[in-house]
Image (tube, rainbow over the protein chains, first blue to last red):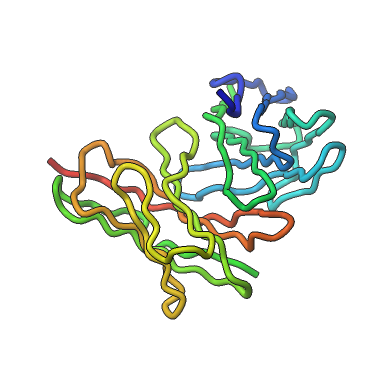
Amino acid sequence: DGGITQSPKYLFRKEGQNVTLSCEQNLNHDAMYWYRQDPGQGLRLIYYSQIVNDFQKGDIAEGYSVSREKKESFPLTVTSAQKNPTAFYLCASADRQGHGYTFGSGTRLTVV
Amino acid sequence: AQSVTQLGSHVSVSEGALVLLRCNYSSSVPPYLFWYVQYPNQGLQLLLKYTSAATLVKGINGFEAEFKKSETSFHLTKPSAHMSDAAEYFCAVSDGGATNKLIFGTGTLLAVQP
């Protein structure tokens, strides 16, 4: 079955470390997105990519980086510059026909 | 620019009662509108979508929504709430254009009382 897979489901980061969250889709979708979710704040867009080897900053890109070397993959790196990284991170993908997003099951990142 | 407003961050209903979650949008072009549901510690699941066909849209789990252009609304309803409907619900708007980027509301947490 086609879908979008995020891993790991839970991730712990020490102060000053970079960590990478994985997002893989086999839906043949062109566009992929990363959102951050905090309690009471809805979804905030971090980065998005409409095509391979191209991506754009969202509303809260500072302290994050991405790459899009393959259509299927859109990993997110949370760098040490992100001062408050504890949150639930959601990856999504979409086709060009306006059918809406398909979401992964999320990664919960905690700073220890 | 597009935007979405969800009225009521928390809604509580009794089991068997009508569910009504409100969503108003702003868009300079004919919008595509979506409702998503999120259960705790999970991703978002598409409930239903409006893409300029029928104005009354039926979705999964007995939910439906009506697009009202004159009121710029896309409220979500279900005739009879079930305990399993307790979740957070997000309304979203897109211009359906090349980017297809969705703008999400801040969500409404639905509680269902026995």
